[in-house]
Amino acid sequence: MIMLYGSQQDYDAMAGRPGGKPPMSAEEVAAMHEHMGTYHQGLVDSGEFVDARGLSAPVHARRVQLRDGVKAVTDGPYPETQEVLVGYTIVECASYDRAVEIASGLLDPDGEGEYVDVRPVAEGVEDLD
Image 1 (cartoon, rainbow, N blue to C red):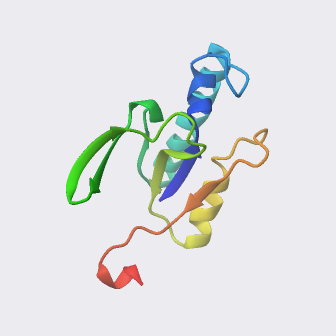
Image 2: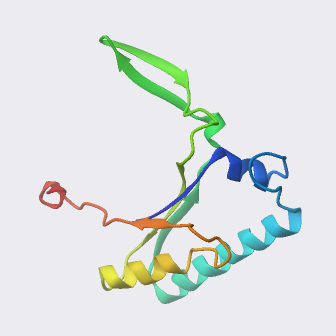
């Protein structure tokens, strides 16, 4: 599983709202989506694609938490949260190194410091150690 990260500021920028990052134009957002679609189609064509999804903005999240033995639901994580999971791509490929190679293609070459994480999906309890 390749996990992609971002922040509420990234969602605001994609929506063209001013904030901590410069707003993206509709053309820039469309180009980003086209890149992701093309990249994923390449994985479909190679037989390595399993699934990919983007998640809605963090402001739409609700946190369910146990507090003093009582389940509590709150808004969150809050917009000021710096980093959240924004989407994922699952691939089935020949090796872990190949998964890392695929993940590197999901980085924006202009996004200095941008990163993704690659983690194997556990198939059973024996994979949890």
